[in-house]
Length: 209
Image 1 (tube, rainbow, N blue to C red):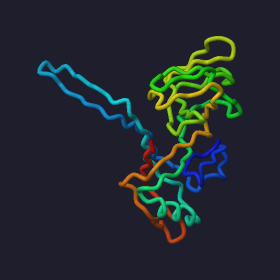
Image 2 (cartoon, rainbow, N blue to C red):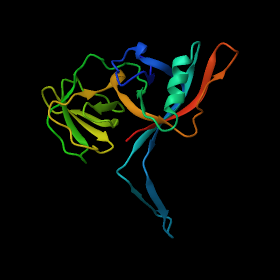
Image 3 (spheres, rainbow, N blue to C red):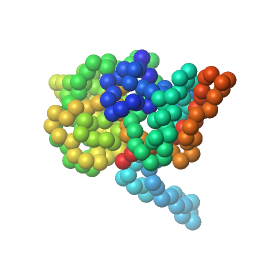
Image 4 (cartoon, rainbow, N blue to C red):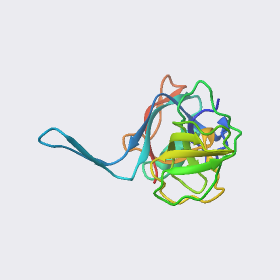
């Protein structure tokens, strides 16, 4: 099973060697979607939501024996420079095959939530984080249905931020990268546990839109 964490570069083929830091529990994946919520005098709740959404990850890191590469990346990025992480996937007892090569079956305009794909075997499961090759945005699969032959229909969240083209590759599993910045509550630097091992108890990683 591949590990999730901070990548050395934009390259992400699912190999552990591509990581400079590995995520550890506790880890949370949060959806930030601006909303306006009001209660009426009859206590009926009215809510309106923005179409803009981003993922925010709060995580610890596995303690380092040699933190030098992470320290340089962390200090150089600070709170303003984007970098790439391997997006954590939801735990499943049976992991989907990582050898599939799903592609977009027909082009879809920005603002839509339904995408047809092919070459995905029995389909990508609900809860899978995916990314389209021409996008920087990470999406989650809300529903997955076979519609005949090798074509599967995905309903995704949030809405497509830009159009996707016929035959555009669909990245899933360990190959999903997310452009991120450190949240301003993250410590920039390193702490030592015992003079040898260094530790990061909590960082926040905010998706770059």
